[in-house]
Image (cartoon, rainbow, N blue to C red; front, top):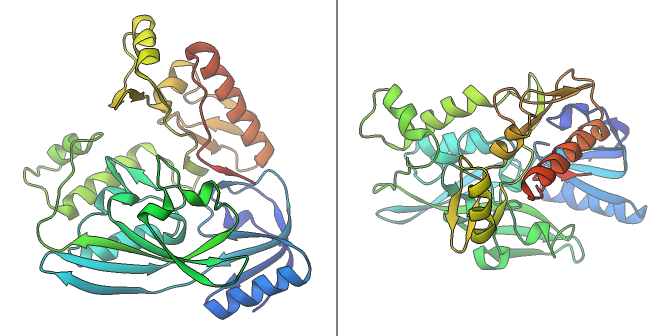
Length: 339
């Protein structure tokens, strides 16, 4: 294991923010991971685990040890004539893993195509898009307890999944690191989900009437590429805010004042698109200094010049939160992890 000092993290966060870690190590296997943790423990260092760096905003240098998980490998186990258990190590790139499954004709993850990041971070915030979430196909994940350095297996119930939420963002935050994740996918009778977002419209453009899982993936990729900036070109972390869920009564009052406000019923509550709220407050495409709201999707904050600091981006997001709160009485919650 090679530990580097005063290591730049600019290429390890998709915002492209120039910050450094006091110490940095890459763990390509379990032994290297344990060695890194022992290194940190011996020096009483804070530790931070990085996957693809796609859901993090560094607002300052990290005064501890950053460990990048590079655990790789995919395995499969046929369960029955229509189901397969696929297990991927934490360091596998998420989109490449989804494409691997599609090449095998394994269904269930196609709507989650082109989401940035690695497999290991996918359960942390129960990633989701276009009517699908990780919890829909999740079986379990193997984690390492940072207290005991022993492995444990968490099933879906123990993960306590919620909207962009899990035990790893609540009482388990900072206590575990995910080593691998297992999903139960279909091999024959796939459930095709095209009713959410613009998937149906995109499939019509593609001239496809009876889509398969590969077609749905391709449609999702087209949609995402058409409205979301490529972090390799313009620094961003995808959706910066969660879509807020508000009481039905509050939504009905807002509907009287703002007849065009969209909402998706969820029991006695309604989920409101954060992008619409932000756009109505005049933020879409707006730039302050080095930071801007993306011109095609207000939900995405971008490092417009490539020179923004994490604090600039954070302050920009605070202005958006204040503006939406003032106009709609809804307080947006950041989806990105602030370090």
